[in-house]
Structure formats: structure tokens, C-alpha cells
Length: 403
Image (cartoon, rainbow, N blue to C red; front, side):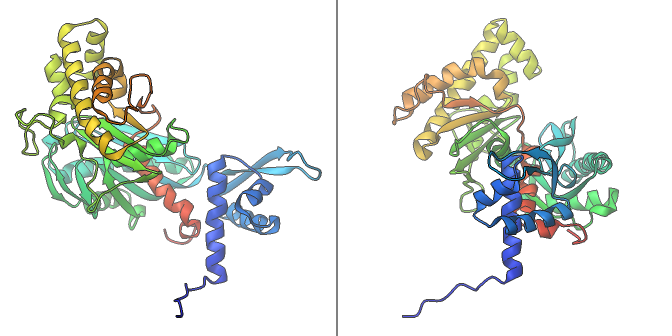
């Protein structure tokens, strides 16, 4: 029986693929030589040299200095990703703040802006217009540093699909066309961004990607990521890929019920995790006005603060033990407000994990519970998602293509 054959790629398609291969190799290495790239990707040195020259001409790579390979012959020139040219614009919209960052091809934050404001007090179009204003200001600064946005990533609270926030209980959003509203507002402020590619996802997913790509996890590639803000977001990473579920809504651990008779949640259910471990719930239980004050009072061994943190840790452990039994991750990473509060959350949390996880792998001595890196957040993950598209097909973002 004849088997269908795959369509053969033409020469231009093969070269396009190889340009991406070389650019990704240099990007992952940080700095390297043509010879090292050739050894890594399995192409001949002349082929790699030709690809490198094109990437240099297009502004995706730069070369500087000399390095010796340890072998006879001429020293190799060091190749690095360019810190000018295509950049990712990341925008995180949360309940009480908006953060915007611009990240270059080296992975460095080049511009960062945060404005703290209560987004619950405004309608969705106004909130997205605010975010567009902050983004436009950041892009103005980035342009002065030789950076051009290749696209924008929106990190949004709630259930997100197809560029729309289907439901964000903590903001009161339902069916908000976030990408369209943001894009229109940004173009009005900065006409050069008309047609800029936009992507969007849940903010916890974006934060998990930032942890995966920029964090301190090393070779660890399967983990749960929790983000503690006003609400509690969750993301699941399996073998280096987000587990999104059938409709893209996987990871909503903040609305996992930990007490069926508990307080009413904004989602309509009772006893959701974020009613115990979300920022608003924690501060209310502790009688404090902010996370810094809560930490200060915990350090001073204030009984009310310690009780609130212990209860939050217990409920986090209850929710996470079920998730760990179901998904078998290598680690749980706590982001948002949680790293600052880890000394007081962790004891009750790890006690629950140790008692409830059936594998026996989550004892207090295993160090599977980790704080998120200080260099990762959802805005950076959103910007990096744009750059992954650039790395996958640099020719689509080359000068003069209109991307």
C-alpha cells in the first residue's frame, strides 16, 4: 500500500528553517562561535557562516571580540543576539496594577513601567486604554534605544481565549475583546503600531513561561506555578510546555473549593482557595493594609498576622495536595505576593503536602516548594512569547517585511 508523502520543502523553506535554527542556538547559548554553532546544529561550517552573515546583515546577531576554540587555526568571532532591533512588548493587567515591559532578543528587560491603580473602579475599555497609554510611553523610550516592537503580549486575569477575556470575576469582566480594545487604543496613541501582532493569555500562564525561560529552575521542566495577587492564579507546565486543557482554561486553582461551607466567592461558588489565600483575603484576616505591613507584623510575631498566614498556608496545601496527586509535578513555584510571605506560609503548606500527597515525595526536606525568581513576572513572560515567534521565523520580522 502506498503511503502519502510529506510535501518537500523548497530551498528557500529549508534556509528559512536553518536561519531560525542558528538564531535559536546563539540565543540559547548567550554567546558562541560559528564553529560551535555548526557542531551543535549539525550543519557544515560554510553553511552556518552563510546563515550567520545573513542574520548579521538583518540585525538579529552582532559579533564582537575574539575567542580561541582550543584547536589549531584562526580564532573565532563571538556571536551574540542583538540588543537592538526586534523586541517583545509585554503588558500585564491585574486587579490593582498594570505593568509594561520591553524585552530585547538577549532576554533583557530594557524598559519597565508599573502603575498601581484599582482597575475594578473602571470599565474594561478604560482599563485597556490606560494599559495602552503606559505601553505607548514604554515604546517611546524603547525606540530611543534602537528597539522596534515585533508584537505585543497581553497577560490578563481570568479565562482568556481568542483575544477575549471570557470571564474575570475579580474585575467584573465578561466577554471583553481585550486584544481589539488594546490594539485600537495603542494605534490611536502610536500610529506606527497599526497592525502590530497581538497575543493574549491568562496572567498565570504568562508568569509560568517567564519562570520557565528566565527563572532559576535549571533543568526542571514540569511544575505547577501559583501567582498570589488579589486572586490566585495557576498554571501547569509539563515537559516545558503549558498544559492548557481542552478550551485553554486549565490551571484555575484559585477557584478550587477548599471548604464547601466557606465564604462566597466572586465567581459565585463558596469556599474557593482565593477566599483564604488571595491578597485581599489575607490582608483582611490579618487586619493589615498591605503586604509589607503583613510581613512586618509577622516578623514581630503578631498573633493575628501569624494566624492568617498559617490558615492561608493550610488552605494552599489542601488545594495543592490534590493538584500534586493528580498531576505529579516536580515542584510547585509560588509567585506574586507569596515569595515575600514564604517563611510563614511554608510550614503549614508543607505539612499539608506531606500528609496528603500519596507518593511520599513531598516531605518538608525535599525542597519541592519554591519561591518564584525575582526576575520573572507575567509581563516578561508575555514579552518573551513574542520573541519566541521571532526566533521561530526571523525572516518574518526582518526589516522591510512590514511585521
